[in-house]
Image 1 (tube, rainbow, N blue to C red):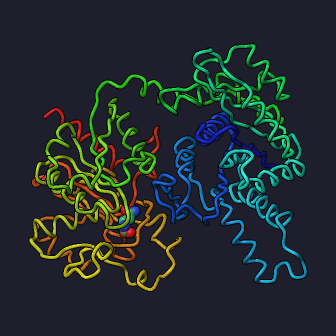
Image 2: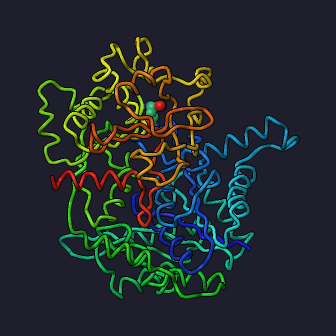
Image 3: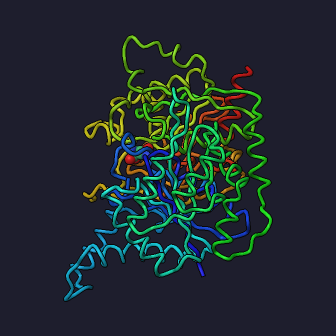
Length: 538
Ligand code: GLN
């Protein structure tokens, strides 16, 4: 029988609920239990795919092709399990499915109401995650802050869920903030007290409190929170600020959070297998060198817009005991006449152009790619970054005129990037990209083959436009290598330049960053970081 952990948040957003949920899941997995994770987002979008990354950070993509909240990236990186369509549920998804059922006549005769129809739908999504994953423990995080209008039905559903499953099968973890007041130099517990009261008003008594604070709480503060929250003192888990998020699971482990949960569930408490994670922390804390990578994008004012890329770079850095410093470059800046391009890239040993949509900042990315190619600086292009590399090569090496992608210039004479036939008829924007895992066959004696050491790989996609195969010959004749091809559709997945032309130039139509883990970095990022370290030494 599956057990359920629910992670809610109080006081304010941004306390690290996602990291708390991931840490708990990792610690339960380390005790030998099969875990699965899920996030409920209270917004009305069906998925975050149609939201600007500036609003909500990156869109994470699961292997089965779901566009999800970026917290799922944390989940996968912490627990090293593939999540799926049952892992990210939004109010938009819940409501549209209830309305669809109503139209179909599934509830004939009934008046459709928030309770029980919406609340049942929410509970069913939790049960569905349990049955499809066959996990021992499902960890569900509720987005937003307790008391929000948006999440109130979700909280009501959790109250009912506990009633159905009982206290031995459900555990409520509430994360809050203990602010520190400078001047009087003291920690304040009132916001936490009020947040617990708010949760109780919704009919939920938390079992564990995770308190975010800049310093240690000390016994008297802990006792006070325990008393007002009706929670045993040992169930107050301190989440002190740390320089690296990967340290948090070990901090929680030292406070025995997983034992408290397992005891409540009346499950066996075995010895934890945390060696890999401890080794990771040791590496992270003892990085010897530094390398700077220029990340050229148009959402650089919000680092979360490139969260998985950032994490994948750091993770590959760990492999070489190297800290990866990111030089965030606004692509539009590169387009300005008086910008000194050389100055911008002067300390960077690698240039990365990540994914993106729309025409803003495109020419700047092409300039960055050209700079990397001509100056033999390691280049990694991801999705849009591959399309950019193709356009740049067609324009500046093949000397074709009026070259672009149909996405940016629908009238261009040479659309080296174009829509696939099956995308042309699509009118809806949501959920209609080429999404999730597709196979890629890798040609031997290429950089891609050297990196993967495999002839067939599966990687995750999120894009609408493709390399236009009409231009394969001319690009090939001019030296570009097509090293990865989808065997079913013949679509181009990886391009690169031979070592005689450039020391390290590779780009993929898929997003390798979604498969990188801190303990299992990705081969394309590994070789890029390795080449950048080499470039620095030169
Ligand atoms: N905008 C491009 C496309 O739709 C690239 C998408 C991406 O980089 N994720 O094909």
